[in-house]
Amino acid sequence: MSGLLALLDDVAAIAKVAAASVDDVVAAAGKAGAKTAGVIIDDAAVTPKYVQGFAPARELPIIWRIARGSFFNKLVLLLPVAMLLANFAPWLITPLLMIGGSYLCFEGAEKVFHVLFPHGDEHVAADMTVKDPGHLEEQKVKGAIKTDFILSAEIMTIALAAIEAPNVWMQAATLAVVGAGVTIAVYGAVAVIVKMDDVGLYLAKNGKTGLGQSLGRWLVKAMPVLMKILSIVGTAAMLWVGGSIILHGLEVLGFPWLYHHISELASAAGSMVPENWTATVKWIATATMDGIFGLLWGIVLIPVATRIVGPLIAMVSGKKDAA
Image (cartoon, rainbow, N blue to C red):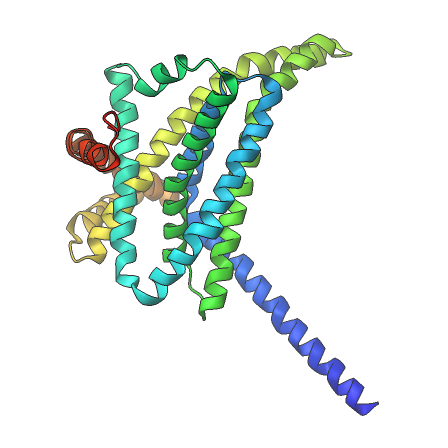
């Protein structure tokens, strides 16, 4: 009997340790996930375009296929690589972050450039030539998963840099929770966004009350505006996060002047307002200056990407139009 009681005590102790470990993983995942907010916003803003032009019945299946690809990207492909980097080549994390940040700056700057100087989109033109809906869906899903891989790599690297775990298993568990949680949040939000106009249309036609029908009509009219806002927010988030990553990376690599100068300017801005607004104004000032830097760096990268990197990728892949 005493042996059984001792065993139960041991089981209870192990259960307490396990519960504490779960709490630690969730807390660390929440902290690390918050660092990826900008990329998550962009991911949620970018993904809905991949279901545009398809029948409403195909929208959720397409989103589910992209979400499965995202889980595979994060948990099967990127998680093991991230753990290898963290434990065998941690010095590579900052340069990789900066490469990803540069990609975000380029993408954001390219979107701004496209608005200021409209030009044709070769990918859209290519889609217009595809007659088979099934083939077009395959193309869209593959393209979305490729884009997700880049954004997922950035999310996992940012999260990895933010994780403070006592051992490799806690680190891996935290990173897995971040990856799964981000994927569920992004594609759950995307599913809601792309179906809202269908919900609005249903309410407008079948609402039992005038209020319900009015709400339906409002949803139908509001969704294009929401998509536009999401696109703007996503672009701003790309520039802000990308610029912040580059500036912080420069500081880590021994070039801290610009990072510290921005911090000093933000602190000066915060000191000009009442104390309860100081932190908010400081954050806004820092994010704004990071975003401006990200835009300028992205503009510098546009000719590099289109004239050098794109042709090199095309030459290696054998695709003439890869740029």
